[in-house]
Length: 208
Image (cartoon, helix red, strand yellow):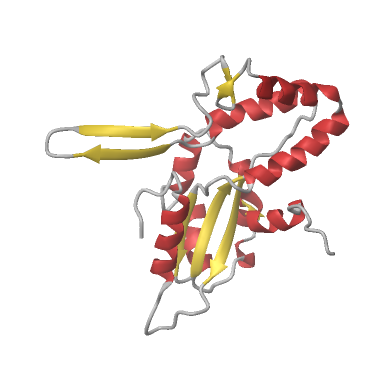
């Protein structure tokens, strides 16, 4: 009987797409077809020492943009903000969990154990990163032209990312080609809105 294999990190990295900064310097690699483009926060672990590894994880709480929504009626407005990993300024928590809990302490013990364990854990965490909601989703009749507009700061997307305390070095872009639309009937906007509603990207200001 064929065994079910675990998630393959290399397969997930295909989902990640291309790193933003090299892509900005090589726009000719971007196709000119219509489609949906997806900006992802995919943090790295630049320092694999025990202290550096923990510091990288702790920075996630500050870097992952919060989800914000305004609920209102004729008399009141309430701003709802959801921070997936808790407040980055809370010294009592680790990734949104009680620092003193057994699960957190066991996790930290594995990090302290050895560089080999940290290497294995990094791969597991990168599989988790693949499940982060995208930061931004957009549509384009011409992917190359539209992404060039973003890269040249003709839109506020890069500024929104930078103001969210996210390094552009940790941003990747992938795309889904729209091979169905034609000049008479386009479904790109519909594809974009469905994906936005499913994933709720925090830096998308409106759907569609």
